[in-house]
Image: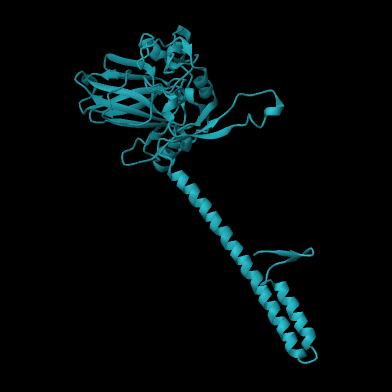
Length: 373
């Protein structure tokens, strides 16, 4: 609606309600002596029309604002659909500065990596880690690939492995990504160069339920709660640092154990081989730098005893077709009774604890567990 100004007064156009009111007042003054009742009715009609015009204008403004919001939402959806599966969201944190003047510039920003491979080594396709080297033509490579290639760039044959690429190293130090186990409970923001190291020890690595027919997948803590609630009674209970019997037959393929207090689930696997039955003890849980649980497994027969001590291996999924782990106990067939049954004595120590004889003997167990005895 256009506006016109005459002598400082704003005129809102020929269709303005104010002009209608003025015209009606003039006509009322001229014909007041003739038709006083009709004039009053005309005023009411004009006021109703002006109110309707105002309501119509308000409705038009609301409709236009709603259309603009819908257009904005459509634009955001189109932008989101334009990102492919390989697109990753990253947070870039600039280096900290003691100068308070540049605090606004030093704030973290969110960026979208449409091609995450730019931060990978073009030779081994692993995440680049500091130090990063480049040749004279700017081709980059990680330090391990430079040694494997005898410091010869595979793209241009120029020497590589002597000049650092400081720009890429700064980017690697600044870029942080959420752990890919975020939906399983991991809330850590990991720098891009240390992403692989974090994945190897993330406690929230997803684990699958060991029972066939159950499709539950979650972190080790979620799995223990799920097994205690949904599959109560499906596992044999035990306590740490206490020896308990385990019964096996020749045809039994596995046995599930669950600690009573902490709820940790262990999986015993029985595999028939030519020399006898192979027994392995594994723990269902995410990878850990602290190592596994120390356990002792013993089999007895008249005049013969077998005792095996080792550490459990953390597994995230049970697969009966997988070969047995590096640590196992082979039980000859003669140990099984006439009905094909055997009773084993098993003791699993709490994480980080060991039997007295091992601690007193001074056995070096730090290499196996990664933790001090």
